[in-house]
Image 1 (tube, one colour):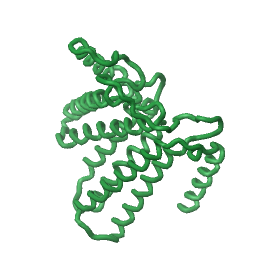
Image 2 (cartoon, rainbow, N blue to C red):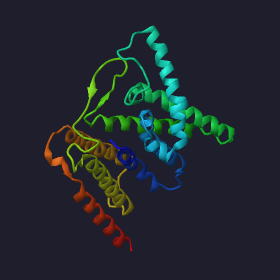
Image 3 (cartoon, rainbow, N blue to C red):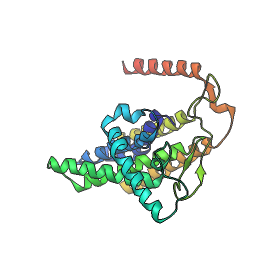
Image 4 (cartoon, rainbow, N blue to C red):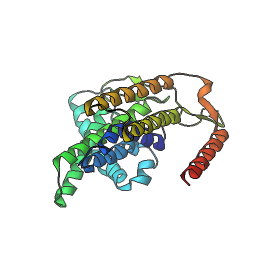
Length: 265
């Protein structure tokens, strides 16, 4: 998927879990915000292995530089050492959707980035273990969501790389399959999560229902899981219905932006 889709989908997956915290009394939102920022960065981090400059490069240049100059080489070296002791299914080389698009790679990269953050805040004398832990989890979750999203495309993801071969893929085309046509399924994923977040915020803000916090989170988990499952099923279908004229989609977006401007004014 494109960088903007990775960013939007990943953020909207975790936003519903942060919304209830906004309505708690005397809650410190520093840690949830740090977690959300880490998810934003993590949602783009795996694409540091692409041949050109990804959205990570333009939005978080320092992270992109660290990934390319430090993190990715360290991950590659670690797996080179492993391969000398145990033959791997694949040669671990610097390639797009290779080791940095695998659970092994993102766990190591999340850990190394979290260490770099911890060193930085220790130097600034503001270290907080819980915040550092949430940043690690945010980076990891953001990258896991990135892999899930890429596994919905026709290129797919090898979740077992480099230990075994099993490509998990869907039918979504990141770039137009047919001239003048665009796959709308990433947009459907974004809108479905966005609508759920809006409804959740509306319900909690107006106190439409009064239930315990743990039950709210259980319902959120069920709803988000259901939305993800439905969109994964949609991603595996092969129908011309999902390919829409790009110009008509642009016109629709212009109308949406005009409506939002008028609504805001």
